Length: 498
Image 1: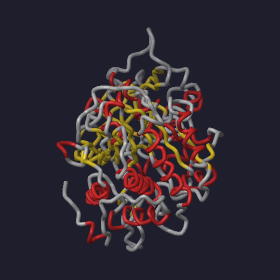
Image 2: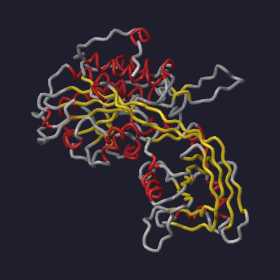
Image 3: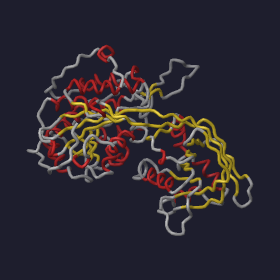
Image 4: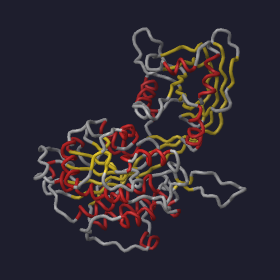
């Protein structure tokens, strides 16, 4: 990994001695200003912005006294990614009974292929719901499947859809097209997929043909089969496979780019690592240069800087590492900065597939994401509360730190949209604890405003009161859980030696 001369770029002097003082707003702000600066170009994986971001994080953790825990003794763990960007497509739908063309979809449809070029004809078209396929249900082998994507405010938005899609691919579907059930969602999905769909470079996880279609176009298409779009989507949990009586002919050209990104991994060695390990994590990536240049307005901002999402979380982890690194701990404490969270929690998935520590030894995982939203340093949302075995211990630390736990459960809707969920899938206690998500009004205002836009940058709207309190809470958690005196836990074995 190319080292960036950040001492010159940032004008900072690094110290190897951990700061014993509480973490303040100014401590966090200086990292956010750097990571979310235009010089880092929005920290998109696979760009020079990535090189600057991961080098900055590694440099900070190294200066704090952490030990590198990446591949071959480095700070970095490679994450192979593949990006597919739609280039051109043509698709016709025929009646399977008469052979006549019944629909040509050109607008509000994006298609891309696994390989640079894909051409096929007479592909049977079916609709797939979320009910498990049983005996007597039509097979999807060799077929083009239209699969509804559940809304983001339901449990299945980011997991049920992915699992169902993967099941269809492994059952032999030649293609899977995502159906949006709300027309208002089309502009955002179009922008996202026009920039390219990225995934881990695992070929068996991709169909030959994939895409996304708006609700309006889906409605017009299924009408040719005598069906109602709203009925199909409304009954999707009870439906398995519905034959639409259509065949498709298509030709698709796709830009395919394979590249390496990187997780950053460090650790504070404990004196008794057989008692388990603790993991703090957050994602460093964002969307980079996310807008095309406007020839009529060449100076218009084009960078999605990601100040709140998630330079703020990385600043918390850097300062937390500094406070913990100069202290003695019984357990190992790992720090993980993941790539490609914005592209589907991919860095976290890569980590659990090839971890530097036996996952069975992790006593807890704590994710820091989008923390700079609240001016309230008392109330915290604990995403993951009620699903893990550390609830009581978190309540003890909260009481010691004078923090009030939000019991509304409103923030739980974000559980599957953050890196910690990858660990929950493997039954590893994982939490995202933050004052930001205890302020529902501010969270919604952020998501409906600067979220994933060029306006998520360092400005007067940045709130760091809650973020500083959260950072100090993470330090307290680290001290409590890394000590066998306050958290005995249970003995483990097979800890990787890094």
